[in-house]
Length: 397
Ligand SMILES: [Zn+2]
Image 1 (cartoon, helix red, strand yellow):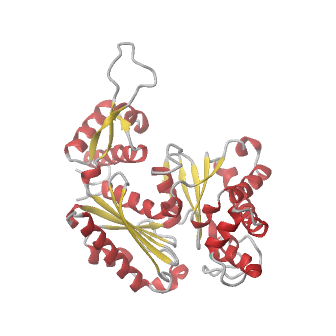
Image 2: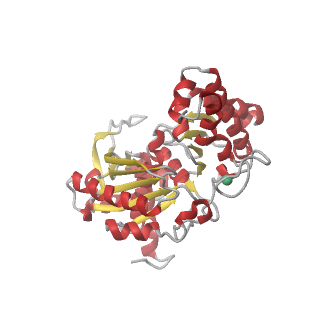
Image 3: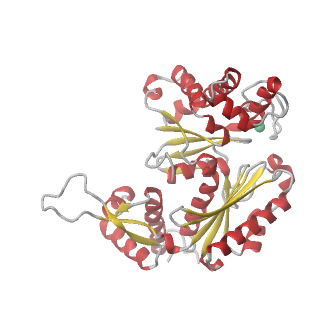
């Protein structure tokens, strides 16, 4: 049931969601800190927390918060609140370009089970969705939970997603998926609510919720895999732009007259720093059987050719990011995706160009770091999306 916008009921639902999102984002937080983070009154927070505890959505954690400044009366440390891990299960799915990953997690984001398979996702929508449905049902069965304990499924897709309908925005990016209603098909087969989001946006949400971006209210996440994209968190909220396509950095032209991209343009960032481009650059001298794992391993071991390819990729990314950093002044630039496993040489390339191209006031403040969740970020972001979406709808009183 949806309450009329502006009604007292909808205000209470919105406040309840704010409390829930704050707890989810911080992992463990006291009532006082929820009041501080949300700007709600102590009475409102206390009443909403009581309600969420009695609904089994939140739980009191056994660990207690040590106050930063001990109270003069030596009062008890505050009780910490977290999402109740036993509140239900959540499914997360990442439909990459050449593989599918499915996880079952609890409400705190801890992974209970995982399945993955290499498959030509771009060209085989029916097979990909059949695998997702089978893997999801298998994971739920293996966990011993009934399907009605699963609060929802999040799906990370490698294309922009419409803000309102949550369907693919530009099917030309995934031509064979035109007219495939991902949410409807999976809801039908798995029997749970399904929420679809862009994979780079969800990677950003995951690093912000569970990873290295925890507590950073302004960050840019860069997903470097077969596809290249960015996700933003600004002012403490995931930012999707006016039409849901914010962060489509992979499809900004960086080489005039370069290779034709899957989006139809030429010389997109993705055609220069995506896995195919990096592997292709190395395969020229190392032979056609070169894989991404070879490039990563050799670059880490200090092979000059592979290192060069990776540092150059970092520099190209730095150039693409510099204008954005100048505009947004982020605290963190998080580099994630399969290529981020290379680590230092890639980050060095990004840092070098940012420090050269940005005013010191910004370049000295921005930290460029690798993601903590590795190539699992997108699927964990899908878990976070499902938890948040469910918080918004089903968990509203
Ligand atoms: Zn493109």
